[in-house]
Image 1 (cartoon, rainbow, N blue to C red):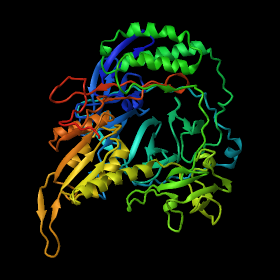
Image 2: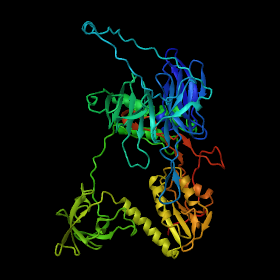
Image 3: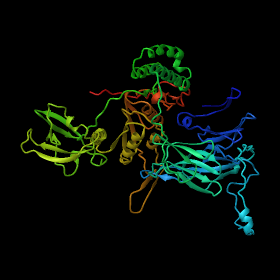
Image 4: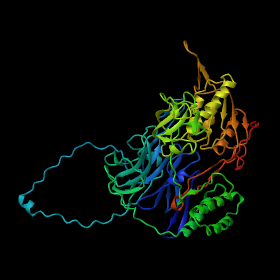
Length: 633
């Protein structure tokens, strides 16, 4: 990311700096702070060690200064209106959280608020205060004087001139002072007179959801709360008011403690006239520009991108609906022949959908009625989700007929799910019988499921696990990793720690739809035995405790991509075992949330391609190829 300053007065652009890895989130959150006299520009950017540092650019002298070192990550600088301090957020607190399942740990909530004293002669904001109490002499006043006293004449207030800001860069970082208060998750620092405003997100692991708006009172050296639950904020130029966003509504509050969002700004009556075809042309052009400016390969995979704009632009002129424009944008982006180039959203008509309740069963029609062919079950220990018919006390069994739902007959003349429409998650009365008729029918109340996906997923995993267990006399474990996102991460740790004692593991990453870069996945599987500890009365135990030191193999197929490409590639590079199956999808790159187009449409672009240490610079063919293939017979 390039950092420039555009001067409206001179119509000149000054090149200031360049970010190292800044894409996606860092681009969206990037903010800069001008000093009160508009000479100095402070901002944070990333460094080669992935930490961030604070920089100050002297616009008058055209000189860049790095204010903080790479040792700690420091960001979100904000100049004090008095010109004495530069406030920053710095990650200098280390309190680990430990896993319940293995001996790993993380260091969240590490940020502290701090002030950098800009001049050597300026006292610390935490300088020791004298506790001497001054004794005031009561002034003698006469009654006559009191009667004749007149209110003083107050001259009209004049706008104070901005203070000249001087910075002693020599040993500047050594004048960084940590402010009182606990470490946490702080961001969006903004300074007003005598105050440092900031957003405080809930601490990782706290379970809280609300983001609070607070300020640090520089004189009283205390933290005070303005609002307990906000979205985004912006401090007004006068430093006395704040624009607050909450749940898509906007409020103006004072920059002081104990505020309430009582009067919502009236925005619902705001209207804008739009000429659809002109808007469509703008949306199309912006989508084209986003790829031009952010696509990881400046050569655009060899495509003449200017020609593509003209070619597909002609189709936009012929479009009759917003849906057609979205289709054309997809076709245009498709010329890049790259993954992670998505599009969608905007003012597109959406089909009305109705929820459906589920019993978690396989149905089979028999005559006039539907019969329960199978009740879907995961492992006996999978209490996460179960079929309503598997709950204790529910007498319905496989082979029974479901005759009615809430008294509405269910026959093979209608779709089996018709009486379950709009009943997702609701309690219903089921009429059932062991024979195909109403004779001897019974009723039972069950709570329907909103989806069967997870239940069927658990059943699928358990079927594979028991098959492996039976074939290996219980010596080999089976783990399915559906993605490299949160669900895949959870499945790996869940199934891995539940089968640590196995002599070997089959890692099934078929149909893996990607997510994160799975280096931690491989790290978990690649733990080596370091020591064994003997005890007097129990079995010896190992370290690392959550490690499987047996043989491993990975199953792959062509439906795996992105992180699903990387996982088997890293697995093989770590020497964990062979890959068996068919070649993965070769779609590994990274997407980024770029600026939103008009009417909330999106068109992300992959800002990075993948290369390997063995073939630095290679950006293509990121597939994992197996050493052996098999065909299902």
